[in-house]
Length: 246
Image 1 (cartoon, one colour):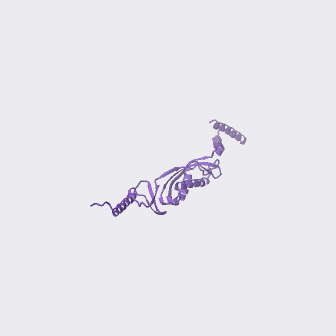
Image 2: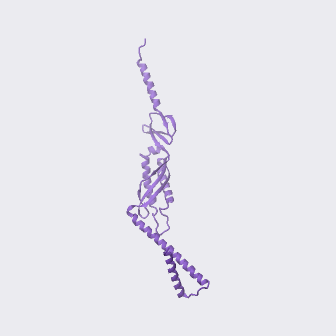
Image 3: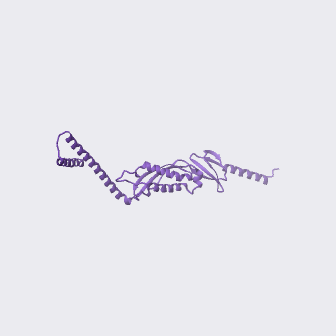
């Protein structure tokens, strides 16, 4: 007759159940734009970037990493230009994780590491040029393309060792800090006024010279030195007044 399930059968069923659980526990689904970093007892055992259903040893510790192309816009960061003038800068960074193992195991938090690199690189790049050149035609921080290229190269070199690839780092806003904004605005207006006056004066002098030359060359008038100086003075006043009324 039937005497029930004995110890051997129970052991077999338990072993089969454990194997089934072990097997099903290793099933995983890989997704597009995601990667796994696998470790076993603290040792790196590989990375997985496959998509779809797969089997991974359940004993391995899995760390999911986002490897998609991403962008990050910073908060207004303090900086100074070459002259020590306080600035506020906002930077847009386009990046992705290229090496999941380095990004996960090389630093405690690769996103925080990237933020710190952005702050450091921004401060160094902006300190090379003045924010504005009021009286000189020298390169300034208003050249966004040149500043962005220098910032991208520096940031890419610093982020590469931890497996981060930087495609672009562009300053979207560079402005004076609130405590110096009003003063620098007045200086800019004064510089523009001075440049405008120089332009107007150059135009007036050219016009006077051309007028006097035509009058004397065509024989319309004969002028001695005193009359020439008086004519030049009158024409200068007339032309300058005409420019000022525009």
